[in-house]
Length: 232
Image (tube, rainbow, N blue to C red; front, top):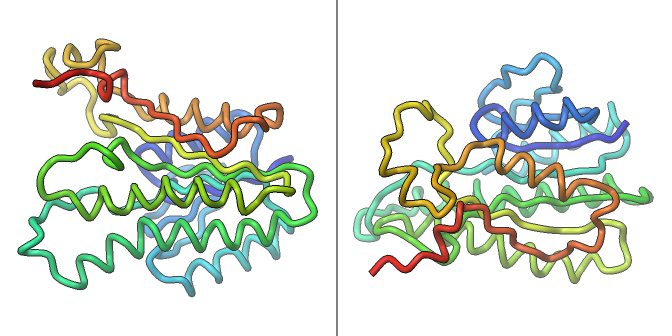
């Protein structure tokens, strides 16, 4: 049985992805500061912004599972809107350390534990905000741009290993009450609906498939076509 690690797997996209991978027969280990509601997943409480927490979590995983096969870097601070004139150093460090540094050091630990295996997948959850943004979310956009760049570089650095590295950039994915969205929310999308967590989870499963080893260094945009739409 394959072992899949999902950061931020206790809620939203991460939680739906954990469910899909469990249903597909994976052992799922969720790393999150929030407790995971899934009884069928292994839960390890940790803070992605703290490198020592990452190292401790992966030691626990190594002791129990020995090897790992899939890493989904989903954990991130997403709800942050503050103009640059208001941003404090601690704000900057919290966003970048959680969203980017956390993903980087999880990848480092994953590569170590995957050594010697014939199959490995790193799937980084970025965002369409790596190249499209609203005002006052530049820290989030910066962190996700870094995720895309890290994906590109790791793909090359891991040449000669069985590990592929890809990113997924979600657009508007509703992780709360979908029924509260209005008609306009859906109709502005070329796909005529707002995204759901399952839309990202399904792409994660596709990329994790052993047969899909020729997809490497890609950034798959999953946004219902919004980034192709002229808005002025």
